[in-house]
Length: 347
Image (cartoon, rainbow, N blue to C red; front, side, top):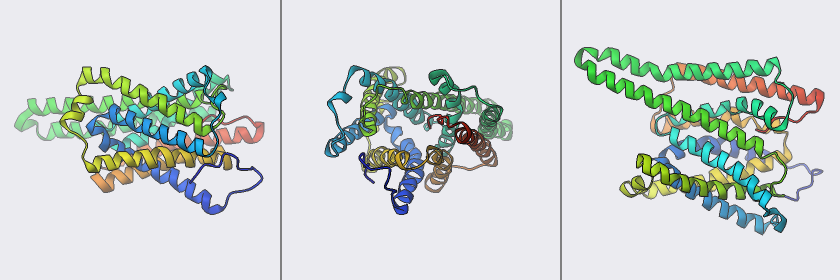
């Protein structure tokens, strides 16, 4: 799928191209969470930063080939815009995902990304001075918060049961293990809350004027800055936890890991983002935003099939609450756009 930047709005794309683009965004982006989890075991920020740098170079090459690059794109203002968006999306958003997958199942991490639209409601009002959220939107936010609470309870339950069942044999050791497990789970949850906030802030900020003319060039600039930021951030992370460059030396990526890394570069960054940008130019934004419902379900199934990640009843309930909250907000936004022609918040 290539991005046709000069495509006329008068010509509708074929149904087959639309299906392929949606399939790419649905399936590819949903599968990247497991790949991120596996690759991050060898140095989360180092490999993620190098991935975005490589993807940025390839995107710049594609943009040059399509004639989408303009000298006016590379101004101080456009680079400043790319720096904010790139750091929010890549460093905070994707970096948070990479960290969280070390302590939380990849499917659960993908599920928590579904709360991003909940952040968008407040951020869109602050940054773009949009209308005050309606009662329906507040209901959606409440459902999303309930989903996080249920998800947290699901992660605490196994530790509590383990401590109870083995207390007679080794109460001290079991209690310590349970406490560590609970703490790690809490870190994963909090990390994802911060990551989704960063992704939402970057999405809202990207709508501000001053970016590159071509969306493809803008994305490449954001990836370039974000990749550099992740490599820089890997230094203090290495000094504090010894889990970046030291881990890369002690556990160097093998052939399979590099194949997974390449999958993230080619399919996750290039194909996924290209298909997403193309869809935004040819389909309603509210329809494109349905990837927020499908990606978590794909990630949960992929994690269960390939590495046996568990799918508990509470996880299913949390998924229903979170995705239900997102659905309520999307319906409210779509209804507002229908009757007032106001723009929908950035996805």
